[in-house]
Amino acid sequence: MQHFSNYIGGELVPPLSGNYLDLINPATGKVYAQVPDSHSEDVEAAYEAAAKAFPAWASMKVAERADILHAIADGIARRHEELALAETTDNGKPLKLSQRVDIPRAESNFRFFSRAITQFSNESHDMGEMGFNYTLRRPLGVVGLISPWNLPLYLFSWKVAPALASGNTAVAKPSEVTPYTAYLLSEICKGAGLPDGVLNIVHGKGAEVGEAIVQHPKIKAISFTGSTAVGKRIASIAGPMFKKMSLEMGGKNANVIFADADYENALNTSIQSSFANQGQICLCGSRILVEKPIYERFVEDFVEKTKQLKVGDPLEKVNMGAIVSKPQLDKDLSYLQLVKTEGGTLHTGGHRPENLSERCQEGYFLRPAVITGLGPSCRLNQEEVFGPLVTIQPFEGEEEALALANATPYGLSATLWTQHLQRAHRVAASLEAGIIWVNSWLVRDLRTPFGGVKQSGVGREGGLEVLRFFTEPKNVFIKL
Image 1 (spheres, rainbow, N blue to C red):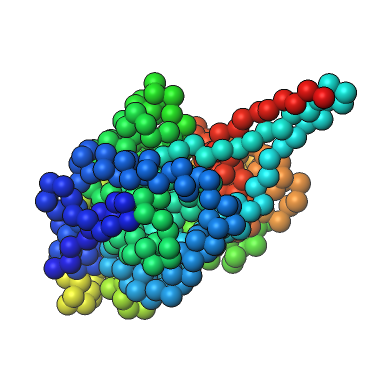
Image 2 (cartoon, helix red, strand yellow):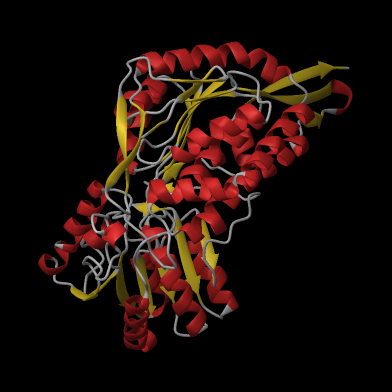
């Protein structure tokens, strides 16, 4: 039985309480390790270590900080296979997905921000004979980072890398459901020469560790990715304390397909955007909107392709692995119960797959479900499920497409399929979402702002936006 440790002050340490939480491999349904069940005392120890490390780290030359982040990226690259297997063990996603996406993108996050910070410049404003202004950007101090379970190392590094690059020190909490790769990252950081206390990783439950980070009076900012419900809780605490907040929350993303779309490309990509990572990506297109001339054909073809997806042991050659946890599986099943009560039709899926290997008999598996016949106000079209459940709705013309696409309290991302150039620009401009993909899905450029509108978030991550978030501007006027 493995016992993971907290990473505080440059040391791997047990929780002060001595208590641990069981970690379950979702593919087997069995406990494989234990992670610290930390509390506010552990967060306080992490804060003290971060505060002690801050002056030296903030004053370090930018190039030296960049070299250390680059060394962390090298460490991730060297342990690629180990990290990928850990991610799949923790999360249930297919191993090939961890190898191809999660771990390489975590490496890219550190590599990108190690370069980006060297290009992050201050501003000056010439006032002629009066003088001039220049604006300095300084790190905030100790910041709090809270990341989710769906893309564990990928999204953890998405916060850690820019926070450290900007000169901050951090108290970070990975999900207690999927902490394995964050624990391995602490080992990598030690080997890369990261000074003690710059990054502190505290494992435990959100209600204990996350709450303690948000409530801490001296932690200057909170960067959070997770559910809208938890985001509201964080805002209610951090807002009155005047902390900076970046909240990347839920989505109920529309995938809008016009009749003139490249049909095969739209169909195949929609399968991926619906069910990648078992539908457990905040950017998945869980509401597919199809123009009426191709609606019936699309439903028939989409259902057939969904039936062909192989669901099973994530260590084998499969399209989908296990749902991350028993509570999440139960949530998915509860939404499937709504199909009949809300008047929908379940075309395929929604049940446990057959022919699972002996290793996976107690795992949390669910065949992807395709549902039609539901209106825009139904719960299945309004609430984030975060599982392999998609609905398909018909529309007629741009006006109805936009009305349906925007008819949710969320606004994270949207996908638009059309070969009509003017329509692409016109509709993209009117979609209420922070990220729009036209004739594609999940194409990421780390230089661009990432985040949503409405209940999908506050603030932006990525590129210069996140470096601005993790710094405080200070204007200086010089009289000539």
